[in-house]
Figure 1 (tube, one colour):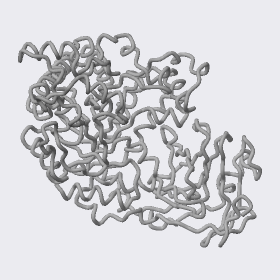
Figure 2: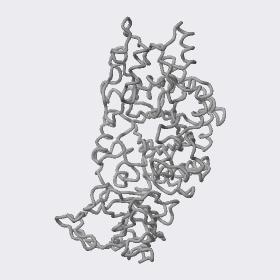
Figure 3: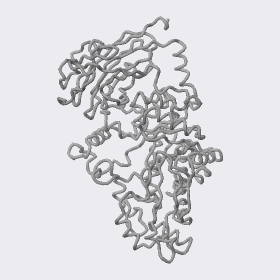
Figure 4: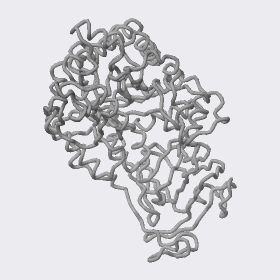
Length: 596
């Protein structure tokens, strides 16, 4: 009977992992170092692999049968990264702690599993960058029949699946060695038992440019992780990566989207000449956006048919992965359309003048920008329908903060929703608006901009023009006419998105940032937006949450909208213990750091 099984608590990790030849008291490059320790509750032997150490894998077989909660204990050092798996798993998963401080050992729930015939494996082979791995204890807590059945029932619920998760597909090869397709599949595995409805992964090949893609070892990178990305992406057919992750995602009950950044045209020095560059952008300077004074902008314009065709072909290929949706990311990289010749000519045909002196939010100019971007979405919808069947592949938009913020950059969300051109919108807490000081306005007509003064202004401007980003709510701002625009409160912002959903049926998700917060703050922010009427949430760069296991144990359940208020901040088995001694060093009161 499950209730007759007892808890197993292993604190001597050298013994638990079989006193392997890969374990030694000396911290060699090819060994796990064993170190004795003592806490205020128990003592044991921890294992550590530091920096460039790459010892062989080690295996702990606890000889258990039935379902258990598996807890891991690690020193609360800020640089802990542990690659761990069970025998049945497709791939190793990386976990880390809350990153408190090294005077404590932190115990947290890793997972629930049927341990019959199972064993725990640790590896350092998957570590690309030089960080540290520690483990000080393993605890196996037997689950009752009722607990197991409840755990399984959670996966069949649909009312709690309300989280939109994402992965930029850059961080994994940056930090880890992605040497097999299974390593890539590991990207989606943390969402197996969670409230995630959607998993959106990025197709990063739109970059795939510069001078170094095929020979990364011959080039210098500003960050060593960038070399790993270039080397490892080159090893695979990326179409296969997307297909296989999509298949695994569907297998574990997720809806899958493949995403791309609408303005992913490259990056500036020192990240140019590597995979962040986009060859298409480099090859077509004639299709760049232009500022009102004729200055070139490092972005391609959707006003050009060639740019729209390139993006549509690219997105259609993304959809061949078998995904349920394609997601256009519009909170990274602007502008998408500006003052270039096709825009200026169309404006002249409509109004008999050129728009160069007009602010970006001048109503006629903004409508034209929205017309052009809406045309792009129409063309995309038509191409997806032609290739996959009518409305078989959804279109999602990762959008700006509010309706007016999106319209500012040419994305009229209400129009897109009304025409059935988007099926879901994620509202990200970022805004873009043009700053127009009185000093550059025309003296005889302050509604217009003096182009000569404008050139002087932008040449001396110190900042990122038109960009503001605040993870919490900022309130309205003034447009070029001195009018307050945008929602007055967070509640008003959520209400306008809900109205869009109620009117047109487009599903709306509210993004929660910053990426990492204390559990209490994370819970507070999510509870607040639910209380204000939000129906779903999104987590940009979700990988940064899933690796923080004590955080993810809480956050992964945030689809349980009506239960959040009563959720404990940590799993009931979460514990912290005070280190009293590590190795031969006692530090009950004083830390012997660097000789004092």
